[in-house]
Amino acid sequence: MRVDIQLPTTDPQGHTFLTWVPVKATARMADASGASNPARVTLQNGGVNGGGRLAFDSVRTDAGAAELDLELPTDGTAVEFWVAGEFQHPSSAYGDVAIDVMASGTQVGRREMMVRIRKNAVNLSAAERDRFLLALGKLNNAGHGVFQGFRDAHVTDSLDEAHGFPGFPAWHRAYMLDLERTLQEIDSSVTLPYWRFDEPAAALFDRAFLGMPPVNPAQGDTIQFPHGHALEFWKTDTLDSIDRRPTFNINGAPPAQLLGRPNVISQAETMLLGMQYDRFRRMEGAPHGRAHTSFDGPINLPATAPKDPLFFLLHANVDRLWAFWQWFNQRTDSPNSATYSTAGAPPGRPGLIGHNLGDTMWPWNQSTTPPRPTFPPPRGQFPTSPTTPRPGPQPTVRDMIDWQGIHGGDPLGFDYDDVPFELHAGGVA
Ligand SMILES: [Cu+2]
Image 1 (cartoon, protein in one colour):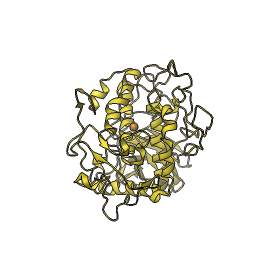
Image 2 (cartoon, rainbow, N blue to C red; image 1 turned 60 degrees about the vertical axis):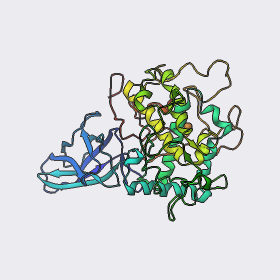
Image 3 (cartoon, rainbow, N blue to C red; image 1 turned 90 degrees about the horizontal axis):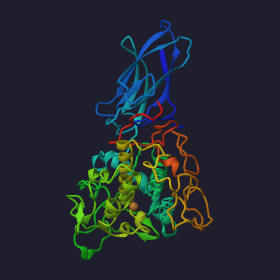
Image 4 (cartoon, protein in one colour; image 1 turned 180 degrees about the horizontal axis):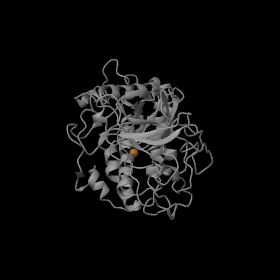
């Protein structure tokens, strides 16, 4: 007897990836010799100890279990089931989790996969860290790679449609996902780690990760990577390397208050900004902007910030805070003004674009017509993913909001280690 498992989130190389969002999978009898009809089988967690874990169910739910019994017809008819990564049990390597199909104590099928989740940078294994850095280094290719397009998407001409107004979180969600998908084309086991800027993160500001400048400021602020480090030859705008000097002690976090004003406020304080989107999005100032200005170097100015790879870990955390807020307050229903500012472009800025729910986002819309930047878009259409059809080639602001497909449809294909998938009234089961 042999049972085949099919999952839709499988890439052309046959690698399967899951997040916290359940996907509809099938099991079918591929070889029914010795089986009674129907054959009773049990799906269960395989893989290595400490690896990813799976949750199964017979319907789309947020309460799957470690095992699921199925009855499979011997004629090979496929039987549907649902499977997701079990929250708080992500993979750290491809194949450290598997579906084992058992019949009367015998393994009759097995399918290895990965619960691929964005993690706190300080919790990555050395191998996870190095795979991420290696993919990033290849993307940059010593200044000759496609990374320059990412850097050129976040420049003076485009800042108004990505900052200062309601679309800030949505545009940056797309930007992070574009980068992550492009890294996954290099190494499909990589996700974008986040810098939790309200907690100590010395392991991130380490020579083995994103590095530190010389201790003596008289020797400059250029990061000193050890020989052989994947970012050793990092280059943007034809300038060498990365300049960055923290203005805070890296054994702690940047201060929550500075000169009597909110600075890099905690996650709890960020949630307390409010349950209404227009209150929450004040986080663009503190903690987001203050996290940038906690350094000397290009990262503290919008037009140059993405020259420093730390930018993407900082913004992964900004996106995580938005996702956490969305989950905590059930804010994924885009027509609701508590979820997103539905009033449109603010008064006095009638030409402002990229902030209305239905607006496409530059550069992925490939527009060169004002008020969009008029130079050639530095990125192509939005990259496709082997694990989901969303968001499509020219995403809108609306496409970025319901990232897990709570309200139906497909997810965007990413999740965070501390933000679960949770259905609620108003969601689609
Ligand atoms: Cu920013």
